[in-house]
Length: 575
Image (cartoon, rainbow, N blue to C red; front, top):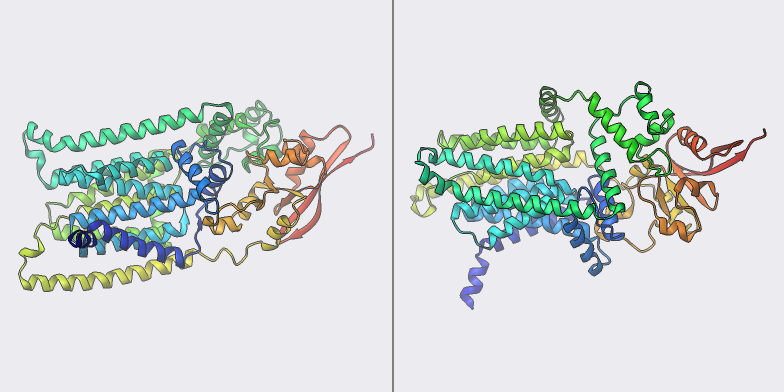
């Protein structure tokens, strides 16, 4: 028993778990802990509060898992809990693989580099795309390490599971991660000169890579197809899937000009620029023209007018790199670190292994161009590329001389290298922390607490918030700042928006029409909250919901925290 306990205490897994637990606790403790954007916030509400598991971004299997866990942890947001747990598992997997390939000292230094660059930013901001990148990096690292060891044990299949969960969060990122894994294969082949072997011997070297890559790809494709089928099983889920897909695609390109495309918009019922402006603001009205047909028209016009070419996107890539360097943000630090590691890599290995940094850089450039061409260059989309580059480059080192074979003079040099490494880590930590602090101001300083109190203290009133205003407002709600607090019963349940989903159950309880626009005209203790100009919204009501000889306008009731509260007034005019 004593030997087993000692063996467990010395295990690489325990080392990885202990190190990453300490880092995770520290990161959560010192940061504000919020969502990076509203998409995960709304996904967590739909999946865990409303138990609506259909989504075009989150795989149905993952949604069901998070929603089921929510029943057991009623006081905690299960969506965020699962994401944090999987992120921790990914960081732990990376440390475990580095400890297995190298020794504890090198694994500690390399893991600290990865955690300094990505853990602080990741644990403080909930982001599904970033979680996907970490899971895919950790999963592929476990699989590649299993191929290296020629031992397909539990850790290998844990890697396959992590890759699957990574695709559940962001399906597109799977192909980016696979491209980097293929780049590692080519680098490994060049380093070991396997290309010189005859076909039969080369095939024995190539076979495990081929089989594992095909197996993982089939699993990812199958899981995605299963989710797609479930999302189209009912009319409600299929409509929401289509709406979400169109909204995401439209957001990646500039909106077409209304005056130049009046005929196309008129064909779907949009005859006025005010209606088009509301469509751009994500207003949705299935009974009128603010629906998926209008979004399809916008997307078709965007594709027709798009000036995206490979050269244009390539220029955008280098333009973004320059901007990151000028502002010296987190991506700039990651790029500088990659260049420094590449320099150390090439100097240490000389010509034999120098293909790795080059292959990763070329893969990163191709992936960045492809993502920008198909989607856009948002930071959360590019984040994973830096993760794959740095993690795989650190995994690609080959320290062939074992510590036990070194003379004492070399051991003293190793201790010196360890001291230098710690100094470098301290400098990296200080610089990255400074960048993080300057780029993450305290969100609670200007939070509209008076408005939140007003909404909660008037449960008999129903509030409908302008979409742009709600995007700003959602940054400050208690659930948003502290995602793990979960969804408290009745918290802001009397707050709605003009978006796709409405709280139809609450509208029925108040004997209001399920169409939110018609509900506002009832004047039955229902109000609009808007911090922007309102004449376009008033014009939309008059064009689509006013009867002859009626004028609809917003009448301000009060203003709280720069948010204006209006009553929608229907005024009859004389003939």
